[in-house]
Image 1: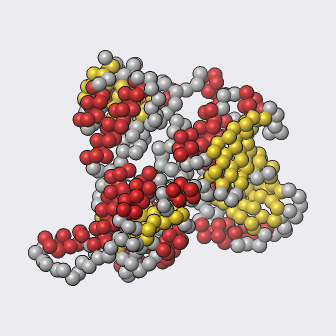
Image 2: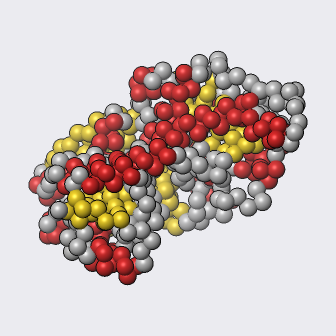
Image 3: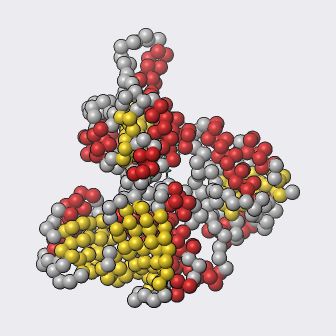
Length: 523
Ligand code: NAD
């Protein structure tokens, strides 16, 4: 029988599934030495977030075939080490969506009807039937920011309450939202029109403080804001001021910028209710995290395809060393493309040129899609699931080859959004990714850190004005390049900068004479 080692507490139903395929040994609270010893002859290792599956643990495991993570994040598992040894890692990414969606509904209702405040009053021996008058959900507009797994579950439940749903998610195709009966709008419209606003986006540099003073000022006086995603999405200082001055009605928070919150003034306000990051904390979420992963392990052991594999077995080393630099390049191209387009992608055409045209390019395509999707999705995106997620998002991927190219071995990508089209070509020079073309303009640029892509008309003084504006905000320019069609025509400026470029600066530069557009790329 297969030896299955379980080193973190796991739901009994998950254990039952595992017992159908092997001998299960449950050994929780192991020291590092004990884990190294126990894992030696295990073929399957099942963990939650407690066990650190380090490279040392993986290298010590002589027979290990599968690692199961009962939950989403795999940051406690050394994926590279597992992949190098051909060990398949599976997880359960969808286990907590319903639980989080239900808590969101719970918090919405609790805030609308002042349930926690009324309960506290009742328990103080009061019978106050006046102070806690609430509002209904029925007929109100709910604005959902982020229409992914949890956002869509919230939408379904809110529709059952008779709410009208609008959503802001620039990466979801309109027809997907329409098929769910949801109207897509921009963030400002959502803030203006919603009676309730709920956040379901990952925390990234782009989404940090996406709800700040400016957005709150657009909201209705009776608006209720719910956050069961991540604390940093809301500027808590701005939220505090607005709630204190009753510019909006209430907030219901499961997550905070600092957890556990220390002297957070929000928690002193009567119109704030909350829970201590309880979104995924249900019996069912924990049970399904276990049972989903156990089913995945069963499939892998039977040689059937599993849906939630988070890594891929490696190619032979000589093939891999050839392909690897182009995977790094492709991931960067994906990352740049989505930031240039900044909207949902409809179609991607990837053309492999030169020697690359003869290689197996599947891993390069996967790396590109990983780069494309990771700035907009959770950390769960990886080489294995990237193509499936792209397909679910209606992104059509077409591949082609070109036996000769002026850039040698190169990858050209053409991405089509709803209205825009972006093209970009990259190659490897001295072992490093280089951009050689953006939207038809020739460049020779090493894409690293933060850089600005500015479309402009080639007129004297234009570059100077951009540089001065950046300088006014203390943003240092480390390098620069200009690509142009012809003197005096449309051109592209690439500026390598040492600091984050705030949205305010971007807006200012966009308004300068002869500037057509500006995008800040953050790699
Ligand atoms: P998901 O990846 O399925 O969906 C995220 C959605 O956000 C995607 O549709 C994406 O297109 C959209 N998005 C990304 N960037 C955006 C932007 N700048 N503007 C608007 N939309 C953007 O993720 P999910 O599983 O639905 O999880 C959503 C959030 O819930 C995550 O932040 C996650 O960490 C959080 N979460 C919280 C708990 C909890 O205990 N409270 C539990 C699980 C998940």
